[in-house]
Length: 111
Image 1 (cartoon, rainbow, N blue to C red):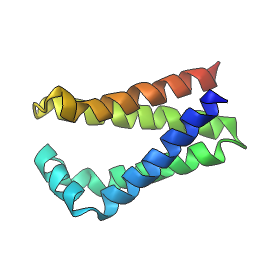
Image 2: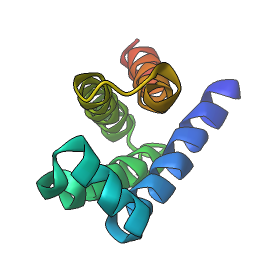
Image 3: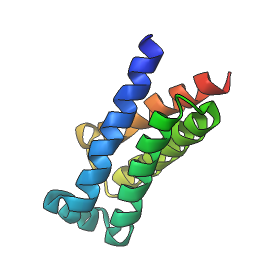
Image 4: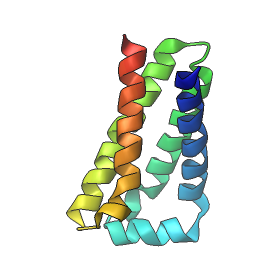
């Protein structure tokens, strides 16, 4: 039961992150600050695809595994970008948290 709650939490989070990435003026500015504005649309689309994959994964466990693992990699890269631009722990924590969450989910789905 709790595992499914975590899956839904991740899917809903990335649904909103993906939409924000594509639409939010704040995130447009943030991707410029990160030094990777050219990746904003791709990241937003990958986040939306990951959210969709988690949701559809309730009927296709392989899709859910690929989606959670893909989101874990995406968040690890995001965390790396945060470290590279020397963001502090509070600024970097969300990316690290979602990396750990999706890594955990993908590990459990792999079992």
